Image 1 (cartoon, rainbow, N blue to C red):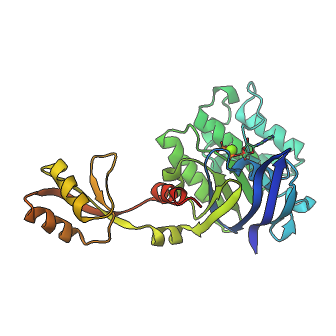
Image 2 (cartoon, rainbow, N blue to C red; image 1 turned 30 degrees about the vertical axis):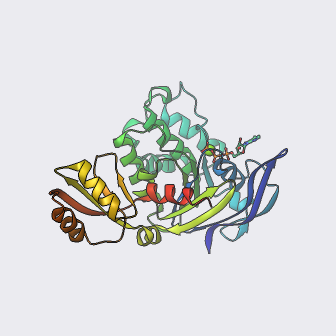
Image 3 (spheres, rainbow, N blue to C red; image 1 turned 60 degrees about the horizontal axis):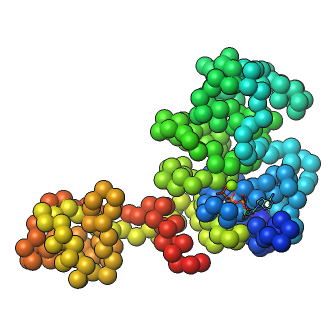
Length: 299
Ligand SMILES: Nc1ncnc2c1ncn2[C@@H]1O[C@H](COP(=O)(O)OP(=O)(O)OP(=O)(O)O)[C@@H](O)[C@H]1O
Ligand SMILES: [Mg+2]
């Protein structure tokens, strides 16, 4: 059984079609990275999954049941936009209040355990308004975890986090899905960060799913390239451009040769033409470049 199965989902706002016949499959235990440019329909899809807005057509099944099923709805945790916290109350009081709203029988025990999961056990007495952005995001996830949901839907939870905040968030995600029963859908534009934690990806464009794949599939389909530094960079670039079909200079100033050639052939070719290579390595393109390539393909 899959955590989420969406078929032919559409949503219109008046004459504007935000989601157009979207299909999506999120397996159980997945951290599903949901990717797409601004306005492609990620938040709209997430809101429909959670029943926050009605769909125009199509079907959304969560754990084998329609997403309008009350039992399934109760097992959904959502963080879309900011968590509805009271700024003057402590993290603990905010959590307990929400636990009471949900009539959770073992509120105290659950809040303690969830605060641990989101690495906030030492900051429970902080007023919400005094929490850092990273802490606020984690409180939002903590709120979403109340009631022990099977599925968490998080809309851009990585925005604005520093390196340490990102690392903690990755640990939190991994912890949440570790027993294999819970799944997370996480939308983000931070592809490098997403790639460090996602097990599955869905790429949406103009309201349609254009690719779904596992992290392993991404890895297998990502081409390798040769990156190098040479004594005479401009001559190296000229020479490589005249021989290979795709040569680019990356942000770090390395010349990249994307053609499938062994690195030693590149070194030999440059050497025979009077250019000394000072550094060379082969690397794989990451999610970010894969995504840019896919978008360039005009799908
Ligand atoms: N309530 C609404 N009324 C009218 N149009 C809307 C509404 N909500 C979203 N849209 C439109 O639907 C399209 C998809 O928006 P959505 O917010 O789902 O995109 P997104 O992928 O989440 O973008 P971003 O990366 O910027 O968050 C956009 O063109 C947006 O303007
Ligand atoms: Mg959005």
